[in-house]
Length: 297
Image (spheres, rainbow, N blue to C red):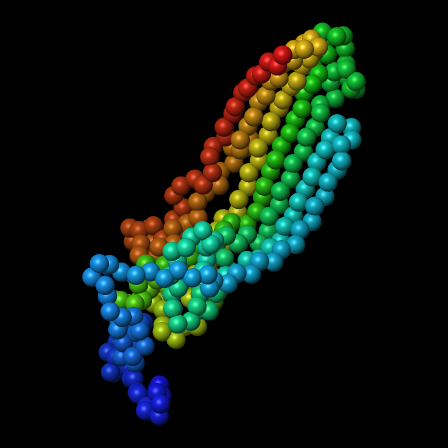
């Protein structure tokens, strides 16, 4: 019931047809006179209008621990751990300006954990001057030192949570069709690691008009790990001439990170010929080796 200046207007599910059960927002707003854009005169020179604002809200909190070993015995290393959490009502960074709220009358419904949220991230690196050559534990003649000396081993690595993902069928709730693009968590909060995608798929329902939150980042994607390494050598040939050699390995362990599973409710599980819950592609690149040489004079 809505009251305007003492005049009560009643809107029932029967008067609005199946709008309430089907989450047909447009029909409901039209019936109670809240669809303000419907009354706006349209300029024949334009097909539509768009409004961009800076009304989005975002909150980011984080703490980190960093341990560093200064250079000693040819070794320097550092490790970092970050715990963070980001929430917003838009889902993306401000550079993505064309974002429409799921409910223009209540933007708070979209308040959720950010798409780019990664709760736990560990990073680190080291550089080690191998103990061979002049001035090190293992040396030899001048000629031998030019061969075995000047080698350095380095590496940079990262291990962290995956990004968030959502389930959606991409059917707009503003249309007369059954609105199902609002994601909903399973009743018991368990995904069973998609061991039974049919059960997961069957646990979703279409959104209801009275749902308080429409935030979409329901599922945490797969963890990410990467380690890059390099072996370099610098040799002084004469006072003015030096030779540098490098071997770089991207994804040195050839570790495979898969993309997140398919989450489109418009596609059924693999047992029904679809791709819901399926992991089909590799997220990162295979090991890549790069060899370089440089002469400086």
